[in-house]
Length: 86
Image (cartoon, rainbow, N blue to C red):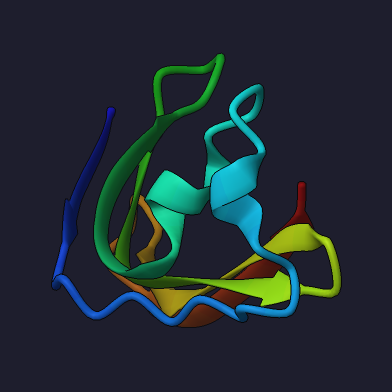
């Protein structure tokens, strides 16, 4: 399950003008979002990720940089990050 809430601090690169792209609607994601994600493995182990996702424009594509802490089933906490480009 993924739960996200925006802190209402959008950062739009006006050079891209993403609002004029009615097909993707990716401009709706721009800003910083709080993440609270449960990752269920096929063997029923549960990992928990808590952190933030920062959505910004990279030229004409949306970049999602996620950083936070992943807690593994035995309770150990690990720093985690990943990046998506849409």
